[in-house]
Every structure is written in C-alpha cells, then in structure tokens.
Image 1 (cartoon, chains in turn orange, brown):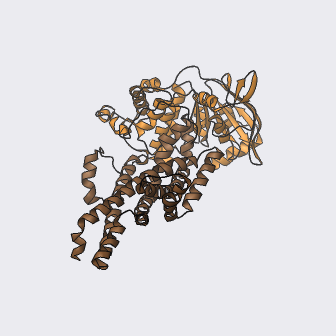
Image 2 (tube, one colour):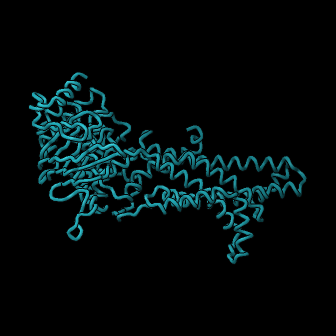
Length: 304
Length: 239
C-alpha cells in the first residue's frame, strides 16, 4: 500500500452524508438563481496575498515530443492571465505542471517566494518531496474541463470533504462555507443532489465552488466551458466573471472562448509550439495582433 | 424419498458447516483480496511483486491440493493446524482471495484517471485518495465479480469431506450409503446448494443497491437499514 501521511481519520460512516442534509436549506435560498448584490459571493471568496507565478526555463517533454522548451514567463500577484493558442501548444501542460499533475523535466517554477518542484536542502536546490508538494498545493486550485466531481459523494460532501480532511476545518465550518459557495454559484437547492443528477453546467459550477472551498490563492481554469452544451456556457462564464471581479485570486485560464478571455483577463499570452509568440492586454491582442501567427490563429478560431 | 426428510437433523448440521466455511472463507478471501489487490496498485515495485507472487501462486494451485497440503503435509514439516475447519478455511480463502485480489486491483485501475487528478487538485494524501475516492468508486465495479466469487467459494466447500468434515456433500453421501436411495439425497443436496447460492446473491444485490445509492444512480431515500432489509427478501430478486 502507498505510504500514508497520517490524516485525521474520524470514523465517519457513509451515512453521514445524509445526516448533513438540512431540513430547511431548500426553502430559505429559493429567491432566484444568484444574488446580484454580491456580498454573499464576496464573503465566500478567498481574499488577500495572492502570490505571483514565475516560470524559468521550464522544459516539459512527453517522450521525444518537447511540449515546453525553456519557457520563461511571469504572472503578477492577483493578475488574471489567459493562455491562447492552437491545441498541442502547451497551454494545458502549463496548468498541469502548476497543479503537479505532470512532472517538471527541467527549469524552475516559482509560486510566490517558493519553488514548486524544488526545495531547499542544506542550501542546495533538490527535487521536492511529497511533503513539500503537499504544502505548495495548498495555494493552488484547479477547475477541469470535465468537472471531475466525485460521483460517490453528494454535492455538499464534494465541497466539504477537502476542507475537513485536508485543511482540518470543523464539519460545521466546512458546511457553512460550502453553503455560502453553493449560494454564490446559484445551486443552494442542490446540496443533496449527486453529480450524476446535475446538468453539465451545474456540475461545472459545483466544481468551481469545490475548488474555491479549498481557499486557494491561485486558480487554474482548464477549458472549463469546452465540454458544455452551448446554452450552458454563459452561466458558467458569468459566474467566473463575477469571481474574477470580486476576488483577488491569481488566475490562469486556458480557453478557446475569445470574448470570455477578453472579459476576464488582464493579459493574454499567445502560445505556439511551447513558446510565447506574443503577449499583451486583451484589447490589443484581439484588436491589433502584431504577429502573423496570432492573426492566423484568431482568424481560425473566430471562423469556427 | 422419506429418508431424505427423516434425516433433517443431519442435513441441518451439514448445511451449517457449509455456511460456516463459506462465511469464514469469504472473510479471509476478502481481507486477502483487499490487501494484495491494493499492493498491486502500489507505486513500489516490491509491493506489486508481492501481489504477483500471491496471485499467481494461489490462483495456479488446486484448492483440493492446498487442502491436502495444509492437512496432511504441514504436520510432517512440524506445523500442526489444530482444526480441520481452519485447514479448509485457509485453503478456500487463499485460493479465492487470489482471484479477488485481481478483481480489486483491476477495479481500482478502472476508476477514471480524472478522479485521481481531482484528488491531487484537492491536495488529498495518498491514503485519503484511496479511502475517500478511488476505493468507494472501485467498490461499485468489484461487486458483480465478487458475487461470482462468493458463490464459487460456497460450491468449492464441497471438497472438505475429503479430510473428514461432514458438510452438505458428505451428508448426502452418508444418506445415500445407508438408505440405498441415490436420487433422493443427491437431488436434495443439489437444491440446498442452489438455495444457499440464492441467499448469498441476495446479499450481493443488497450491497449493489447501496452502492447505486451512493453514486446517485437511484433516488436516495433515507437508507434506514430496517426498511431496506424488510423489503429485500421479497423484492430483492426482482429488483
């Protein structure tokens, strides 16, 4: 069996997910999908000291295929950056490296003042161990293209499991926060539903709430509307616009929705073949791209 | 035929032994299946090697020969196992556990990789990943093959008469022996094994329903145990 960092293992029977059901939750929150005044949302969102991110000569290979070749770029604290570019250009790999879903081959990634994939040992920089990765991951949250909710838990449990088991929050605390977040994403009445009973758009909103429940300082969005039916895209995008406006998370976003990219980001990076072709504020990149490669890409995307 | 009914006490004793062997054998097999199945998904080579050795050895040896070995051969090398029952449970459990370990390993590996990635994104420890997400989902995949193995093991208990235990099979042979009626006792034992298998199947169905509810595949009533159990015997086979 894999070695286990000992976790607080309260002997919770599987029934506890039903025990968490509120008697009155449905009736109190039924006054419309989302509060527009936003103070509910603002209260639920993480605030303060978001770290910056820096890639230094980062290399990532899959076999003989070099996806990222000595990539350098930086994201300021609280900045929202969108990565665009053709598929296979390495955008998603950047997010996956930051979430430690892929191993780094060479170079250094900084989150704030600390290295993600390396740690300091007697003044030398050595590959990170599990403990270091666990510490670093606390700052990062990710929303996936396919939602990846846990089908063996109801919605509320999806949101509380991480805070309770990983962050050591009390059950009451976690439930309260989870309800605040569900309210924010407009799904307060779904806390007892199972993921399989929700539409794609609802699942993705739960997934966003689940990521935020871990109180990350960096939020990674990996083509979060690509798997959704067209009519469900808007709801998820509106939610993310609200989050972008009301939180000070550092955000990295991979998307093919150029309007969304324009709304949500401070800066756009155009990628091709593991390198940055061009970067700048969204208005300039979309309005008057300087590079031929960017123009071609934007034309292809907008034509589709 | 009346001799079959007259010997109901013997039948009962035999059936009880068969049930006991099944329950203990399954318990041992389940533990072994989980331990060695999990070892088979470990990232440590030596853990996976342990899994391979166990699975290949006990899957590749006849249960009857294992039984002889525990009962006749082990004492000769100085290891005396006190009861015949223990020998039988060991032989059955080790053999079926090997199949079970493959079921466990395969099921865990069948849980979508995306689920594993979500557990990393939520910063779960390796133990939490397994306990909270991968194993519960894998369990849904394990149940149908486990149902097969449980019934396999139950039928496999028929070999224990060879070391002198009086189980259902032995009872039927005894009755045939002293009564001279062949069709009666052997038909009765056929039916009894079938009935036990059906009861075991009910337990598996019940577990499958619980898992379905966990995964939100059927409306989640408040799963009060008594209510479900009360509805099970009649409705279980159909539902």
